[in-house]
Length: 187
Image (cartoon, rainbow, N blue to C red; front, side, top):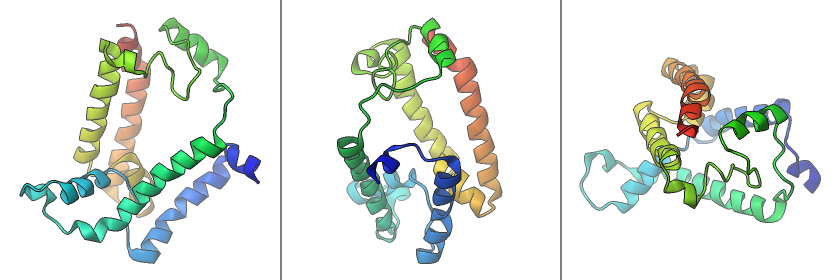
């Protein structure tokens, strides 16, 4: 059984399981799926200032904090007990393309040449980690939710803004991966 859990699940199993979270959340408690609002809830709990954005009944959303803790502890359990010690398997054409940009160390889940404490102090690493983190946070707030909230929950409930946001996420990912990232890696 553990070997089945360790293997990547095919789309026709994992997709419906993710999709079924939407009706389950709606039926069980009229709750929305998404993760980006969790930071707002944490700030509302912890920030004593009277900032209007954080003045709401965050206790109604306490279930979301358990969801976030579940993600954290689930990840810790998965890494500790089900971690794969084998090198990451990548398509040879991707390895060849990345080697053009000096990305050759795939010994971790993310390429060490791109994401490490040493790279954070260099311009490309700083742009990708700090700048990218800011843009993801800003984009999630500007779009009124994150990719999971819009693409899973919003599309399942036929919300027009979620369709627009999801299309924009996809276009942004394409532009970043094909045009902006190669430019940053050449720096």
